[in-house]
Image (cartoon, rainbow, N blue to C red; front, side, top):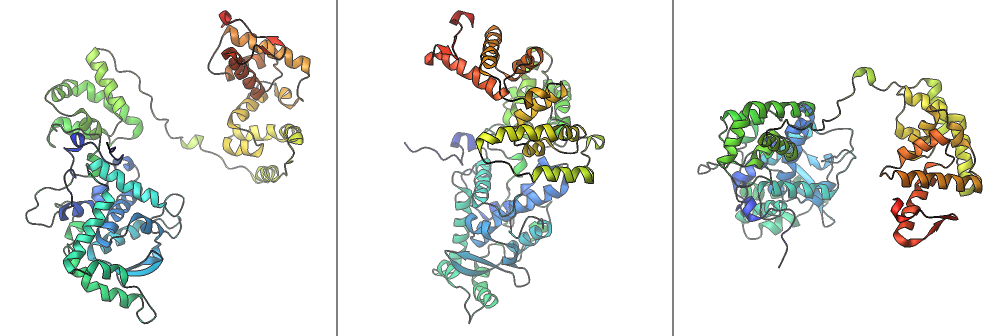
Length: 495
């Protein structure tokens, strides 16, 4: 029995979603999805510029396959120079063949809106990501997730490409082949090639010059006379919403639920507490009447765990449990201070130090580096002039090793970190001490035990050696060995 693809929902769950049963897509479906308002996301409520950029980028990723037939692989390789706004032409390369395709008025409006907010510091890609040119898989996944959230029973990108091909079929039998075969040559440069295809595209354009729905966001996103339904915004359409009854938009509970996501992330928990205290009985009555709890959770913009914890606490008659809040943003008084010129020069000298490649000389060299420079770096860490990531790169320490070196320096035990490896007799004594303490009080976290031994007994073994000792002890308890370092393993009853 074939397995259901991961990018679509089961029919019994997707039955109440907007794109369920829409195969092929209709004009009003595409009209709604190429609007920027359709991709509005409340996660960026505190950053209007990022919110506008995310919405227009999503509209362009839908409009390209639907209105120009450009798939995610080609779209990810396109640059800003490939779009000629004056000639209304886009240059693409399909199967190593350069093409010049004319742009429809609707696609030109979407492209112009995106170029207006496109970041200029992320490279020349048309759809730049945080790290530069986007990966084709990221564009493909965006469309897959969008179709999944809207209940499409097939890949949304394939539906959009088939929609474009069906429109080209209106221009004649060979229109699709002509659209992808005519390429620029020396005799026919790019603008002339685009003008050859423009009559064909005008015949196949489902919207023509009627693109008022893109400039009037508060009007219905339909152009057909018989269309009376539109797709809802993505922010209120989630694939996890089961088919169930929903409250009206003017219902007081609906307004109270939708007000939660308008709050900041640190205020949503307190707002949920107030919501259950004021509308708890209304929530219970709505759920008893068949209103979907998944719809309520999606409307609040919070996770379902937080919502259900408060619901269960109300039903049990107990106080709502403490939910972990997001860490607040640092205040201006705790922001990082740039180091001085002398401190910056010394940091550059430490970073430019040539480290030995031999494993035999690597650790002694690091101990000398720690002795010379670690107190200076620890002071900069305390004054918030450098990050911990920069500090452990300077000495080639892992984050845990850096934490333990800070622990040694703050507790006056830094000489133990700089000392050479212990002698065999000292090592055996340290092993016996560690095993005795671990067997007496086994714990999942070994770092607190190592710190206690370090403070109370000036424990000579470093943390990696101590962790390896405990791990090998546990392996021995599983039957792999009976002795360790000449010491008998503790009896099973002692653990």
